[in-house]
Image (cartoon, rainbow, N blue to C red; front, side, top):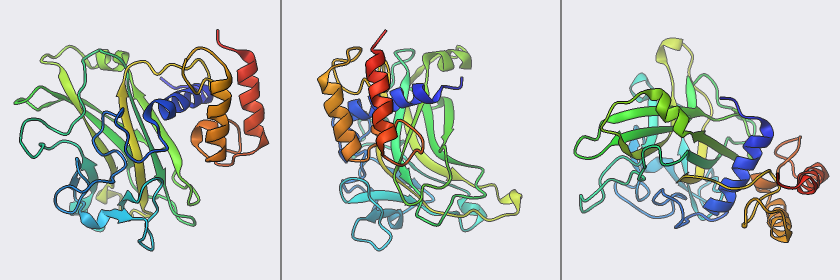
Length: 283
């Protein structure tokens, strides 16, 4: 189902508030190490495993091409260089060191919509080109030791160039989407998160442009927020806390305050849009 721009803004604003998106690592997030700050195995961030990716894809703010949104680390996915690397991703689908569980976030079947948020960047003067899809994949998995995929969904990034700026990504997989899959128990109990890109070698053209990811967040359930001005708790009430949240987001050039065209630019049109939504009130 296609959502309106204002619905997406409200979702993004609520996600930003719940996930504390300005912080590299946030304990309210279901993803382990969402800002890629902590060190794990094989030279990759804690809680993540590479598929045709290695430590060279884990970049630092001190690197010449190390674009980082918060903290000092982010992930860079380069264009595939050969058909054997056509699918490149990080995944949460591997075991904790003690083998007791997977890093995959928990999921309650039909327990509420699943919302995925993140920020991505394509360097200035470059663009993603010729990949079949670049984005985030969610794989809903059954209870161990089964581990089979109940269903999966791929969400593409909304634009292939960001002029060197971090752009908010957000998508939702609803309970209605899950019901549409069909009834095939045992039901999913976890969800693997994969920032990825896929190139079809049969296309005859080479992929182009790197993409950076930072500050991923996954939550399940109600987001709150009645419109794009409802940025702070208590949700469904517009008050001074929402004004302060907007001013903070606007000053930090956060997507939650980017409410009007031209998007990616924080100016008086965003202020007017906020005031209009705030004045309209909650239903």
